[in-house]
Image (tube, rainbow, N blue to C red):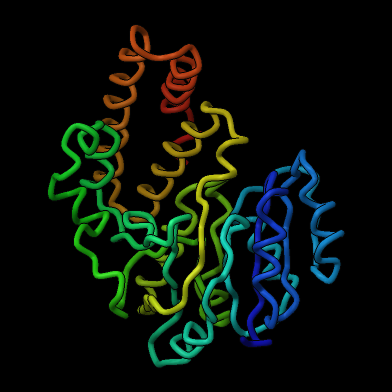
Length: 302
């Protein structure tokens, strides 16, 4: 492993996962953990099992992007490994460092495995989203027709997970970045809060700046996935997902495409709300109603 690599881990109610995550980081520089106001014993577990960890206890949930930037500011190693607390390394990551040292490469990603050792296809590596990607997703067409060409292209159906290659959008759950490149593009955008699309936005900006991202399948981490979502209300999940989708759209698409997507999302959410009136739960009805109200406010569109 490499003392020039600092692992930055953002926790939120991660008491069950964090010990395994930190134990697997032996050999790297002292890890930096930013806890986003957990209500469980996450911090106590860290202090008891891994007291050498640099731990920040935030009094409120600042979101993933702001917490990562906090960890970046608190460290100075030339390589930064973003790692989710429900992921732990099962293979050395030296090759990620080696690839980041190659000309033109600003980031490198490893392979994420599920509990049975299978690659997490559709999550580990994706293409950068387009307006059509968002349209098919928000209108529910991907659920009705999951094998449609837009969805297959976005989720890279047929992706060879055993082949090292350049990719567009690896998940931020297991991603190494060169500090100089990350600082040059401005770090993570804290407007994407509390979660979703902050890593997509970062990958888009890396590509816009001319940096390649390398997928290295020999570097692996076991990943539980979505553990923090269990602590988030359905309303928070929906408002954050739709809101940050539109933030991404407003930032990276033309004005007309963005406005068109606002209309598409309005139609999609209206359809889901009508469905929830007869088929869904009260929580679903409330959450879609909150998204609809937010769609016409400045909060969701900026």
